[in-house]
Image 1 (cartoon, helix red, strand yellow):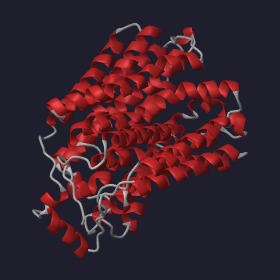
Image 2 (cartoon, rainbow, N blue to C red):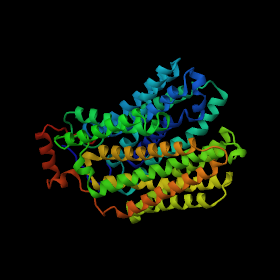
Image 3 (tube, rainbow, N blue to C red):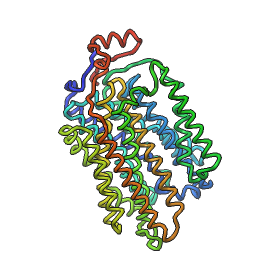
Image 4 (cartoon, rainbow, N blue to C red):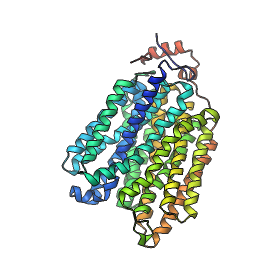
Length: 495
């Protein structure tokens, strides 16, 4: 007998098992997010360490961003088709392989290959969020989503001081030994603890859609991330952006004609989904504006308007933000149950806006930055808890993984744009101009936070309908229809 659970159904798993699953998925998410910031403390030293020019060593950072952007929505769709647990295990295996390659690589080429493989691990976060829908009781789902979603920020915030300590006391490649261990533990825990729950739609992989999405994302993100280096009006930047935009146009035309598209654009343009994803871009921009500006402000010398801290002290000042995201998880879950995810997202964006308002008008000192960054962490924790809930309320259960993957991609797109824009502002500032440049960045973060709040307010009220309900078919009939179409709906099973 096949089981199709609704969002209101009690979980077939014990509370202890549910708690274990949430803890394991949160650990895996933090491990994947940690890989994104693992080299930030030594980014300026990479040319000397690798014996290569800065333009080449920059790819060690950029390639991870690109592969994460491409892999995240694809992994979400594959999870819907073949099982979220299975794809999560594969992603963590690739992350282990990438980390090993980085740890053993003596030169730049191997490091870039390993970092590219590491980037695919980010797909485990939306997969983990989607898995919660199949495992956790409805009354505890909001809190669990908040915790796993927050790992996007928590892993990066905690990773900075850890990376700083490792690089100051050991060989820098020990970072990748550490990442190998973390990823391997996460993979083993997923195998041992996480059940193969939920439905699987089956079907064939939309290879054309995957290739088209990859070309489009790489083209646009490459232009954005390398614009400062190549020049915003250079042939390389304009060509990359042009190829990406044209690829996206052709990809959209192609996807609308597929029976089982990689990204269901008809669902993605639903007002509730589209507005949530636009809000995700704005919140990603607001988050990363502070992530870039605050470390620079803390570490720059007093003579140019900075606060003159070393790498490790600066990392420790910023770490409470990640802990605040983590601490907000149970609170965000309770708020979401009481008022719904839309007000939660409005509240999160508003909290971030207040923090940036302080930055615009205050003469920031070290303790100011610690407090303001923690407040931003609280706002991000609220917002990141709300967005997956909004997405899952708006899409069928069969598309949970793909929809969450796309939403995670939108957040990442916002952070990429912020990285390029903030980087361009700081690169063009010298001497006494640094103070005014930080003011501009904080105003932009404020505008992004306000835009997120407005978009969140405009999200239509919506209530999730299960896949069977979406087609006006009873659950048993939905199972029969799925089998008729060659899809594979598996029963929930207890491991």
